[in-house]
Image 1: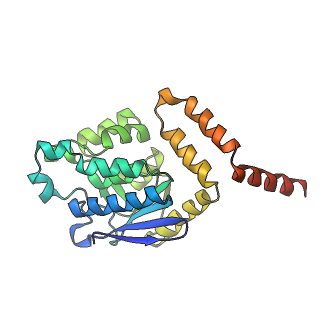
Image 2: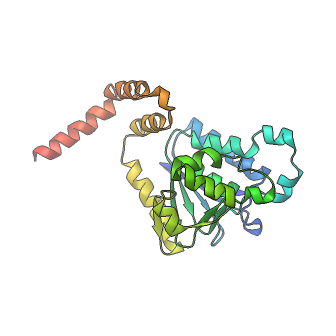
Image 3: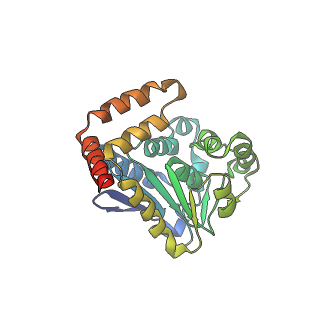
Length: 245
């Protein structure tokens, strides 16, 4: 298997597992990620996505496979399709990045809702130097994260962005100094997220990801659903009782 899956009570941990190929994203890995998505669509849980090899997240798409793909493969959205599916998962997702996240590897990280990385992590989009464009999400997700001008610079030049700069420009949410701290930090972030109501988290993600034209309607409908949810009443009752002590 090109990924290892660890299913827990409230989350699924997916570890990319092609260390001999620097976790390059190939067709088998895409298929495995689709299987994870299908599982999380049926039984929504939080997702932590990380690289298993020491000092590597994903070095990009598998160039040997990419070189042989033609226009029909491009139109099939092989990588873009699974990344979009990850982006649309019902509950929040976190990418834990150590070392390089390049090309498709960076786009996989962008597909997650949040990103945590080590001080030695770096991100880059070298596609134009290989004669292609970043076609699996970077052209629209990267501008949303860092702004149009910075995104265009990364996409046009292939320049690599280190962890410190990534945090400064909003590409990552948290940087840890030591690689051994990465998974603990990622799980800590998920622990904080897990304190919220599952339904509220799900509807909040839907609202944030909805197109601008859908607002404020999606917010109103989501709030209407939550106002009738028993979990909302229980949580607010608990809050008021704690406040009155």
